[in-house]
Image 1 (tube, rainbow, N blue to C red):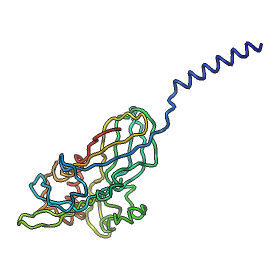
Image 2 (image 1 turned 135 degrees about the vertical axis):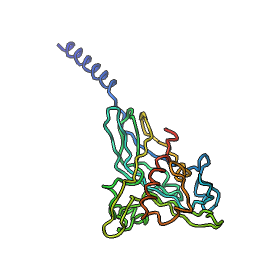
Image 3 (image 1 turned 180 degrees about the vertical axis):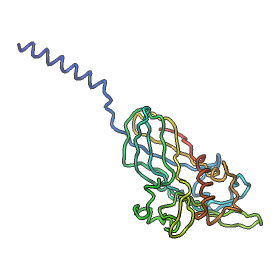
Image 4 (image 1 turned 60 degrees about the horizontal axis):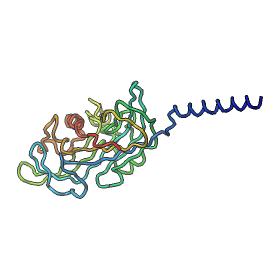
Length: 256
């Protein structure tokens, strides 16, 4: 009997070992997003600020003095259509090197995903003033007369206007608003999803994402800074144009 018991124990141990070998025992993976910035093919850092060295599609010569923007809701869509959403947000500031990399608190399962995306700005239900202390501290709020909530982007600089003088511009993105005041209305959602495509996750993941700053002025609207330069936040036409141009700005550069 003792010998039979030992044989049964041995068979059970072998089966258990085989079962363990066939299961996916990998731990959930961390995700890190690294953001880089270009003017078409030329890298841009804060060392390039305050220099009238860039030319947009309208042939306006301009400088960059500030560039910061908000991303949220990193989403991994499985091949069966189910999604994992890392409900997080992050303010990227080109003048702050540490802000160019972001690792959300949540993790994802390993496997193949048919699409990875993030939201530029905040979805309407999350775009509520005073609920994000760090954004409040960064003076990221939108006035209540414009609907409250938060900016999606602040892009400031100077350009040479059509009479040859340097003039400031404030290319700020918010939720498009009409009728500023006590009862503003919202003609169109201006947050947007950035799709990065299919990705296979085998372990901790780093995504390198590039912003082509020149695209904000390029496609589908050739931006004329002599027409649209300041007071763009209460201008719903300008906000919708910014929204439409922004859909061509981001690309997935590399996967590690």
